[in-house]
Length: 157
Image (cartoon, rainbow, N blue to C red; front, side, top):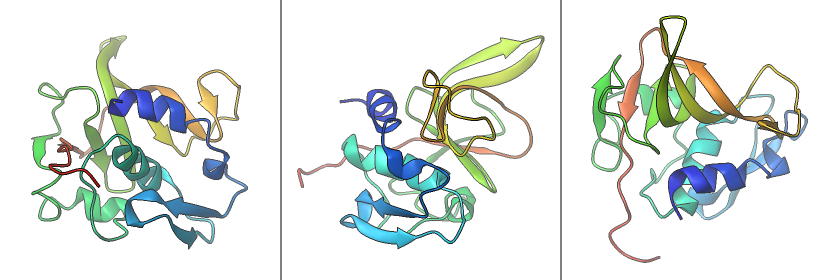
C-alpha cells in the first residue's frame, strides 16, 4: 500500500487525538511514548512511512531532527529546499516545527499550497477531512522548509 493510502487509513487512529497524551512509535517496535502535551506530526508521518514499508530512523526523530539536512540523508534524502517542484506523493515537507505528507501541489489566489496529510491541526474534527486531529487539506508552502523523499525498505521485516 502506498504512503498516501496508509496516511488516509491512519487518520482513523484515535491515538492522534489531542486529548490522548500517549502514542506508539511503530517504527521503533511499537514503543509507547508519553507526550506531555507535545505534538504528534512527526510521529504520524514516521508511523505512516513504517506501515507503508519505507525506511525510518532508528531513533525517535523529532521534527527538528528531520529538518536538519545532516540527519537521515541515507533513508530520507533531501530533494528540495524551499521548493516542491520535484516533490511526488508521499514525500515529507518539513519545517522546523512541523511535518506534512505531500500529495500534490496546488495554487490558491496566486499562492502555493500542498495538498497533504498531517497531524496537529488547530481546527476541530469534522468527520470528513479532519479526524482524530489528523487533517487532509491544503497547507500553505511558505517559510523555510525542506522536502525529503522516503526510500523503500530493501528487505522484508
